[in-house]
Image (tube, rainbow, N blue to C red; front, side):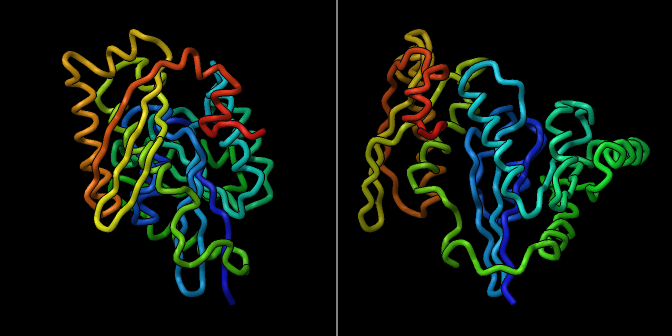
Length: 293
């Protein structure tokens, strides 16, 4: 009998959801940086064996929205509660269990199996971990609490075993050669955005959106034209940097990562444009794929 199902990963920002999904898949699908709000979309990664298909879903961190982009991000996270066959709720040893209690309340009411993963356990002593396990077990009594370290891949074999055991009998939802639901262009934008998150401070990365205007694949190379959109002229200057040095650094690092990702030679051109207040514009959020009509 074939097993298949949707295993959705949710939790607050910066607890290690993307690192976890990448480790479970053995693929670098979700960008994972040290900054919050890295994941903006719901990203699927598909794990296939002969008699099983696990459709993992990485989601944006749960937060109280301050602008329309964050409202869309929260919708992606909430939607992951409605179609999960198994839910992985990720927390860590730093945050307090009562953060975003309303979202935890929704998780508590779910009928599907919930695995509550306490990540980053290498950062804490045994006594604190025992206390955290007890607190989470009281908050989500139906959940199975599993301490892990996604970074060190500690206990992830056990998580995979539990997921496999909980999957329903079902034919596959996707082709067995498919490993994500996203097109190649999506990963180009994510990798460029990751470099921006790494190289610029403060508000800049959160005011940025990346659009691929050209993606031409031929033989062993790919030609890519991408646009970085910012909200203000002053941000455009910061992204480009003195004599274009900052943008050149982003482009160089992105090209290296893209060559590794696609296994081909990449020719990358990046431009910067201003799109005033796009994070609060329904029209632009639709154009950038955050909202449905």
